[in-house]
Length: 480
Picture 1 (tube, rainbow, N blue to C red):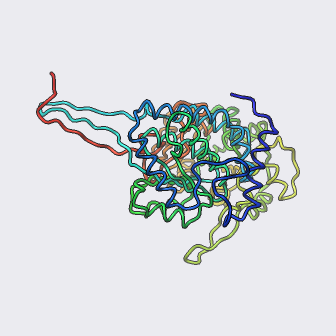
Picture 2: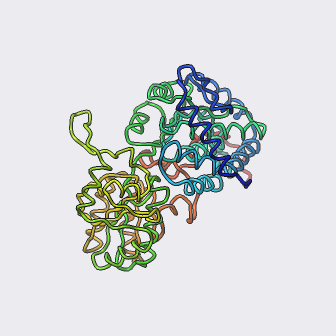
């Protein structure tokens, strides 16, 4: 990987952000951020979709080897420019940690499956041969989040291109620069590898209106949404084939057979990775009463700071705000100014000043506390004491709210592990490791940032973005 200096990173970040903040987008040349041209960024969603349709037709005519050459170049550029995208993501959104975002980009580059994931199947019998191949949809419309903007775009691009599709993105409006940097990177890689100059596209100013155009456009054959429940619901209501990666609220159970010191470290490491932005991260802990004190002690030795119940209530009033739903009912939503912020920054909001070495805020609560019930995406971890495995499972399943996204457990008791896995029914179940092992970081298996629990695809990869086509030769070509 080439050395990239801090001054070079700052230069790229400042060029992008200063241009976006200073410009009136009504007369802004949407393909430029500062002096650098970003390829594939359009002012009109219809133009973007037309460009992607052209790209799809070109990719469709390519060999699998040519597609893989583009993906190889995407991986190379992602590794080389991971520090820039990491710094840009934090600078633009104010969320997460630069080093952790750099590691996430490396994970995407190294462990996102390519064309090797597209496998054909053949069946022969007395009546001949049937071949089933995984074919592209065509133009894929994708909605991406602000929490993992460039990581999601690059991960999706690799899988969707491997499957033979073209892709148009409607990124989260709070991560436009970071998202479009990633779109430009994919297009630069495509051109360098002999592919189309414009292979994936995005919007200069993504809006709900541009998303609606994308969802209803006749050329868009597949929709993929990585985001909150609102946008996932909209995509699933489109009438088209859709893949929805929705919210989670991953619980952790720690029983009295676990390696408690390791569990304490693993939970803090997972909960604080990129300041709890990954949707798989530990959000609430259910600890057996007889080991809870030891677990808390292990957490405190690994960068946690414990607050009182009164302080927890005060913090809850800051990080969660009241809102009205469409029916006029009051509900709580996360304060966007607090999402993905450092623990010491959050503590300062309630008058507690600690060093930046503090990674996580922990507190003991009851099951009904808002910290347990709401997905915060902040390094705040409530701990609920339980008496036995039955109580732990019952409460953990309730706290997960039926999202069937991710759950974790620290235990050496196979029966307990099996019982929780059966009861919670999550797409990802991590045993005795930090949460990020579930997406291949320190664990086996491929990486993804689109975890489709609501629609059932699970840990998405290239094959998730294909449709099956069957070719039948009756009464022929069986040679045994």
